[in-house]
Image (cartoon, rainbow, N blue to C red):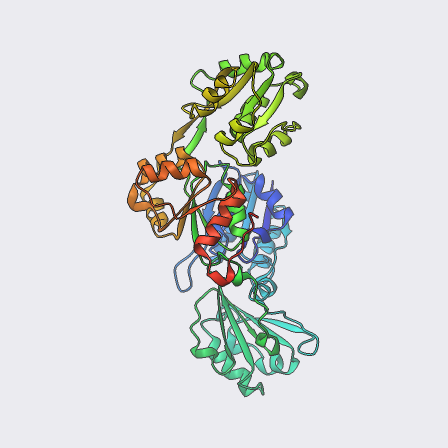
Length: 491
């Protein structure tokens, strides 16, 4: 049994340390505070207990004594307990108090340091804490009134140290802090920056001066930087093309991460609302199993989705069981999934649609195995037969609609865009959430998905030029980003 005091970082999930992710992945209990990012909780096993002990500024919450008692209780009960704390557990986060309580109770614990907001948030706002010719040191101070009252800090000494001053938890006391620093000799014209929700998609950077800090529109949680470096503006985070935009991702749970990761990398806030799930074939996979056992008898095995690849190749004890059969993939994502199984596609069309694969396919005769989703279009199978091939179509999996909670549907309605990667996702989303839950911009991965959306009454705003995830992101950038900032990572 061990209690891990884990620093969650300031907000960007990518700033969680490798060690932090490791212990979260095997947690039995996660005890988290307000500043922990919700998506980090998904790194814990699905059956792990999740307990919130955080509070909003000025609101009611669990007392520190009660948190200490909870950690001791769960630690003694056995298993892996993760105490997930914003920033670093030992930087104004009471991690020392929790460690002392655990030590006194004889409960084993480990501290997993996190990236502190004192350093990360200014970096995300484009403010280096040290800069040659401007600052050779920085001081981190808490502005929280209890238990480290801003009025009790020796602000004269802080002002005399020089360099950069970083204030955490100082929104409520910022006017008094500014007054005391000016009284201690700092120029009221000294640049100041306040960054709210730093490193997160909703980050807001307010630039002012020390004299204007008290009247600046700043809300908690915020990191405040005072000093000459605050006059620098090396902004990058807020300049990404989809910064401040929320995009709904409708891919199945477990498959959304690829698109979500790409969207977050260009600044978007992602709302994952799965509208379909991948389930077993109606026959429980019997036809697939039989087909995989005789794969070497075919001239070609043709895959139209990454899901079909995984379902089929997982049944082969050895990739060499494909024998002389060649392999075709409808697009790059399917070819990449083949590569994950150490199989290189012999044929991938330039356009990632069934029609392009059919046009690139040689004429028969011969035998083709086509594992695909139940209800898939027959354009490929019938077209291959017209080219002289004997085609065996086997059901590899089914896509089933997923209920969408009203709260998620409402959140999706207020988003900027929704991204569809399949016709089934469009159909299921509309059936589950309704037309009113469609945000202003509708983006589709390719012409087939777009045709389905239009047939169901949607105005398709953006369609990927290259029919893959990178192309879909590029289409969203073209549709959502200001013209001066438009880029195209899909080209």
